[in-house]
Image 1: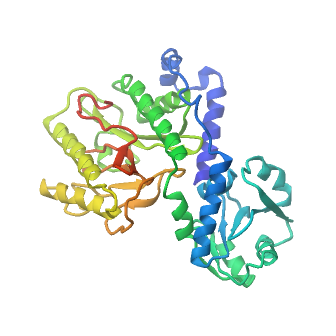
Image 2 (image 1 turned 90 degrees about the vertical axis):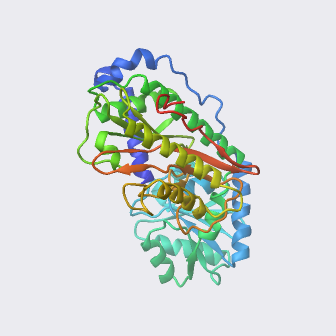
Image 3 (image 1 turned 45 degrees about the horizontal axis):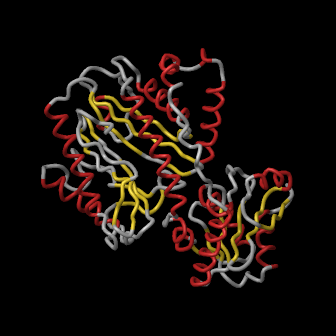
Length: 418
């Protein structure tokens, strides 16, 4: 999925470099205004070598406590997190092996070694395999050299089956790496939170720019293109910009039948970007023109739902209890119950960081206790099939004093961007 997003971003960058005539008309029309936006990322600081060393040290301490010899990680956010390597997945294995002691090892095809080293940000051995060789035998060889074959290899949860199967065929035992990888990634450092804050600031600034320029007759893709253009001009790398209008907003991810903006129509936008890999995720719902009593009522109920979730997110509380609190409130005003519609048909929130959606989720039954450094979305929408839906989404992170917003929720449907 990350590889697909990387491809999409590269295409968007190419599009931005083409002559203006190739850009959507709505973006061309906004170019004079876009010129007034400034890049907010000039002072953004990437994750430094000291923090990466600390990540490996923490992972190794967790491995030692779990009796694990090494962790195997394929390309994706976890590979970036531990090694800095930005890589897409293919049938040719590139992977990191984090041993319980000593430097990491990167296993990659021989002809890819120079490119693999381009983004490698930690000291690591690099072992290559040729096209007629089994890369998992190369992995097993590294573990044998480190005298780790008597201990299980922990598998990061997104690793593909062929890699797991290959390890087992080489006589290695496997186990889940969730306690180790999640144990590191779930708790964000101040440097990570700063990048997420910057990504959120960009998304909010782009929302304010776009909201003032939404007009009757605009297609959903027009509004999305304008949001992406503003985000790029502000220095963010667009990840997604979903726009739902009218009845389409009654379905959390829309329908195949888009609607143009019209007077009195609900417009639901769900957008995010990344800054140096760290992501934002913000949703706003507004009405083009005057809101009806029903639209205003539902909007205010969702705004209250966000505050209920925020108040429930206390240190030590289970992540699931936040979702429970919202569902109790919605049931008390006639929605649901549970996941039934009209009401809230999805979880209250998800973890966020290098991935837009990552553990831990604010969902029923999730027992993980909230702790400083955890980051979540807060998006308890209300959806009314055949009519419309409202979603307000702002992310927060846990501090020693409790939850803190990355972006302040709007207070009124009349000022939906704050």
